[in-house]
Amino acid sequence: MARLSQLFSPRDREFFDLFEEAGRNALHAADLLDQMLRNFPETKDLARDILICEVETSGGVTGMGYLFLFRPGMKSIAACLEECIIPRVKGKDATAIEAIWRDLWTATMTYGRGGIAAMAMSALDIALWDAIGKRANMPLHRLWGHVRKEMPVYGSGCFRGSGGDGMIEKALHYVKQGYKAIKMQVAHVHTPAQDLDNVRRMREALGPDIDIMIDVNMGWSADVAIEMGRKFEKYNIYWLEEPVPADDFAGYARIAAALGAG
Image (tube, rainbow, N blue to C red):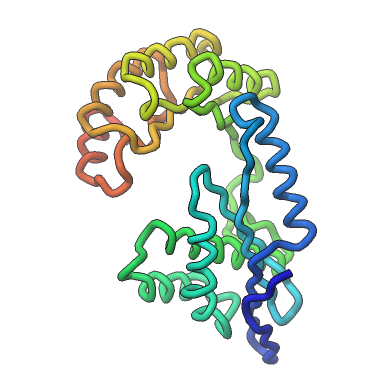
């Protein structure tokens, strides 16, 4: 296990060790995820790498954060953690998660505010919250003051790369398991006409009682999103996710106004 920082042990505050590699349990979790991803035709031949960020407090509490990418970038994120993130969090209060985030956001502002730096910060942030939950002996939803103990879930992973038939096959797999909602993808590899046809076929295959979410992954302009959103309405779509780039605030305002989204 490669240690990237020194463990501190003051009396009243908790500090961190960060590790580049996971311990046995974390590696097992990565193996399980890899096994799940290989259950379906479109992922069976693809390797899946997971970046693990583990924090260990002076009190012996360990939290784990992780990131998964479909594209290259893991080594860059790990380098950002080692060079830019870890040196600033060594010696910080383990419970000051928001303060740590704000400090890192400011420190990485000239090269961050998204991308590699924000993903590195996210891995740490997840690990810190995991450690706090374990220290309190409470799941995070309770620590944050939950309203309910159960919430609806949907089956994701109906990837556009598998084509219309592949997405439908994956969705039906989820429905057989009892899921009442699924999410499919559009844009990027299909024309708008093909996307519309895939959505139509998905609704026909699932029937009226299964919710369908659509993920565009920022693949459209606002004009295309408005046009396609109106065409999707007849298929009773539950939500249209990321139709335009995340920082196109004006575009989202236009889409919401045109499609009557609250």
